[in-house]
Length: 62
Image 1 (tube, rainbow, N blue to C red):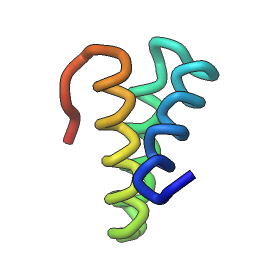
Image 2 (cartoon, rainbow, N blue to C red):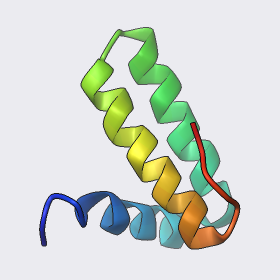
Image 3 (cartoon, rainbow, N blue to C red):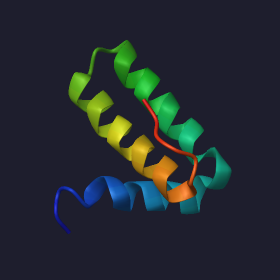
């Protein structure tokens, strides 16, 4: 698995685990990381959220 595949794998796992709530889960992680000024963490989770939205057909996020 390459680094570009990691967000897709994470998104897929979150959809399997959280179903329709996967985007909300990712948004909570983004908010929590933003609250502690974790810029890199926010960037990673925004990529994951975007992948979730593309996989679930809900468009793009953040």
